[in-house]
Amino acid sequence: MTKNNSRMDKFEKRRRNTKFINYFLTIAAVLVLFLIGAWIFGGNDKKASDDNEGSTSEEDSFFLETEDENEKPDDEEEANGKEDSDDSEVDEEDRNKDDEDESVDEKESEENDDYDEIETVETEPSDDDVAEAVMGNWPPIGTEQTGPHTTNYEDGSADRIEIKRAASKVTGIPEDDLIEVWIGNGGDQKVVATVSNRAQTEKYRIFMSWIDEEGWQPTKLETLK
Image (cartoon, rainbow, N blue to C red):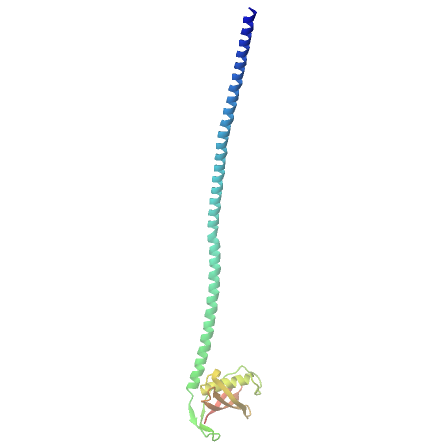
């Protein structure tokens, strides 16, 4: 009788231990499943949050780009306006320069016309070196000199510049091709200028008189041999 009870106690004890172990295994399995579910769903939530943040960043970037694009036309209009203003100023300067050039050209053209319409008459030559001598009603060359006049024969002086201009007009030799061979005193407020072209194929002697406020006036032209 005692031996049977001992066997029963051992069996009952083993059965309780097995039941206890199964209970803990069940709890452990539930915890593992819970952790796995939490990890899966937590990862999805984080991904969704990242996606939302990414979408928000893209939207913000879109709006920023849109604002920049909206602002660009103003900058471009301002730049274009500045360019247009600069172009207008350049055009105005060009027009003014053209007007000045036209004014100078017209003045030179009028002066040339005045010299082209000169009536000349033959006169006695000054010496044997003269092939032909004429006198004419040439107008004064014009001057910027004012007040009492004393002829200055130095190179670069106003008188030398105006004498060369008058010689160019009366002979038809361009100033940049005209050589002043000799400039001398021809009397009170008078000069005598001997000039030629650079090729020395043309040579002239010009007599000039000073007219106050009007400049040097050619009075006689001699073509030299």
